[in-house]
Length: 325
Image (tube, rainbow, N blue to C red; front, side):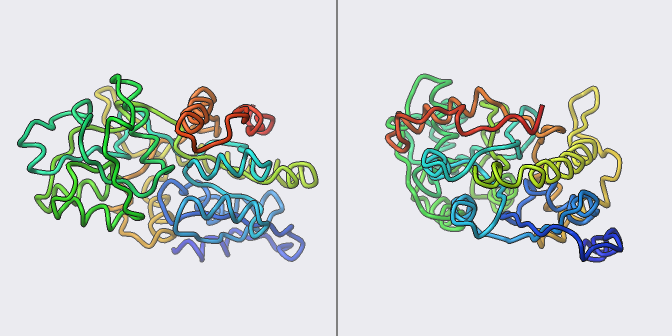
């Protein structure tokens, strides 16, 4: 049964009385709990009719929340997000995905020539040319975190912003850069194409809060019951996702949990990807949606040091922790 059919079968008879709301998402596995909550009727059970609006880049989502085009957003955290938060336009209310040890989500990939010349591990990236999407992106922060661990800064790298992942991979294959930081599916394709070698995983090197669920301060102030209902439905799906995809055995290998195949099918349909492709890049999520608060604080400090975010911003002022205890 498809996700759309599941959503219809789960909808109650009193659907016409549901409160309408909306969320901006990307068609990625990291949005999986939202797709599950929609498909399995968890939002409807809370009295909400949630419209999923799809976007193609992380920065578009907080802009849509700030403008009122959508009520909620869930995506990766960027310098642009924090700039909007500093202006009082968006507030984090729960966690999305994160890079976590043992979960292959974001990879460091060395090009063949660079690997042969000694680029064998993440610490060796110092001094190298690395493709990223944009300055201020999640990839930018991942490299900044790596530098904090190994005693260098992004100024010790040559970051090459190329706007999107396809351009990054083209530059990588064309020998224009030494390495890329890439989503797992892209990284594995680079290896399959014989273009490079995975030399490490961001989750193993520097775990961090990659994404968050957020809304506008006005929505919290004027529609708090709606936010509470949304969070409850989201947490139900988070717990189900976590149980299905984030379970490990004694050796540390990821095993299939309850409902694995049916939930994978929902995410595959929503992202328009084959289930095996989705399965290769399922991220870790906290089952209750708890944020890694210390990392959010570190993100703000990092972007402030980079000159990307107002130095007056207090990181804790842009998180409302009252919804996720």
